[in-house]
Image (tube, rainbow, N blue to C red; front, side):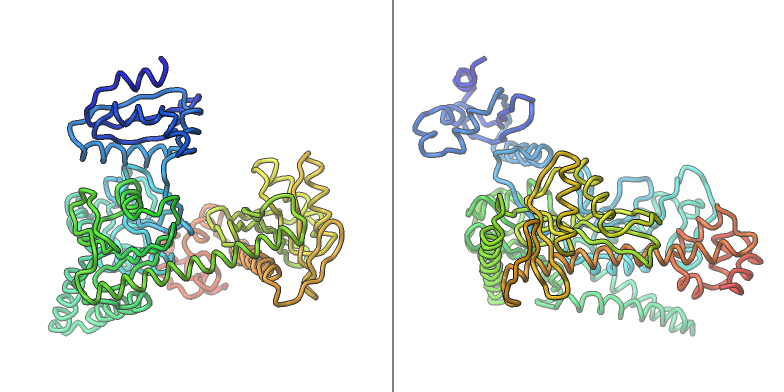
Length: 558
């Protein structure tokens, strides 16, 4: 049926409509109080003249469908759900400037907590947060208090408790030491309240346990709970106390299409988040952040103006001086971010012009190779989008103990990567003209081509396949290339160091009688490095191996 005819036949009732592409993909999801009136507006010539996005949508659309609902709130919720699940091409979408971490409470019989960057529509998530290290420290603190499990064991099969049980960090559901109901009540429910911002019950619980053990003259355990309080203060101190402890709110500042959000929980700033959006309407941002992306909703959202979005919380202007100061800081941060982006864009424009690139370097991928005296060889690929690191797409490549030089490694890396992934706008390689030509040659061998640039370390000389280019040391172009080189170098060396540590541990374990492949694998999984194995007790090693005698032998040999 003709789409315009389908729009004419739609009833004038509340509903949600979807435009589909030729392959059945979602192009646009919208809601309307009166469906027919809204849908007919998409087919007017006057609309196409004023809005080229609508014109492109109608030209690309092959199908139109709609769902009738009872009221506008139902329409709003259905629209948000469909956008979250299908990410339609023409909807105004939130663009994260970084890939922010979340805490997930897993959907299992005995849930655990983990750090994730991808979220599912039916998951339970808290965040986002700015700093992964802060999240790790927070989870470590919560596990010491509430003893949730961290293992990946199959809990349908009963097994012996792991080391966490003996260290009083887990209640061992794997060994049937706690019921599902008690685990939920003692571990998961209090953590939910904590992550929502209500930290008082947790602090009170720790203080009660500390005082009770002190009264019982059990000073060792009293000191353990005292140290937990110190740990919490230390973890939160890094984030900065900004308000009274009872305050839980989000503060959103906007400048043009850039948004900065402060997440304040229990008076602490847990995150400063930066987003871009193809809309300067704060209402669009709030709808996408809370309803589409399903981020947790605080009791109050502080904005530059009041909006009506049918959210069950306060959503408007600052109510006192403290909130006004926070909003001013959020706006100030947005202005600063906008300035930095403008400078970065100018630098990338200059990079394109001076190096005569074939396209604007929106996506740059940087290579680095690391090896130890001809031994293990690894390479890193880092990704920069519009001049900023995009860590979600970073990758490591392990070439084992192949005795190949840097040129051979680079050629193999290029073939392996770009036989599978699309080319970026620019490839950066740590090295001179030789390394650049090695990349170009490998690309030719797989029938592809891309702009390539290198940076020779000794004098920071910019290199292309055509030759060398000398830039002043304060050149913004040089600063961009140096930052990519340093990040690729850091990422490759971190991976290489981890492999060396693991290889050293394997080498030592191979020399100890009684440590077979299975036991060796267990030790590597638990202790990771020689230093951690050395600092462990006989009991801890025996718990992993199931043999105290062998644990004593291992400690005597390392």
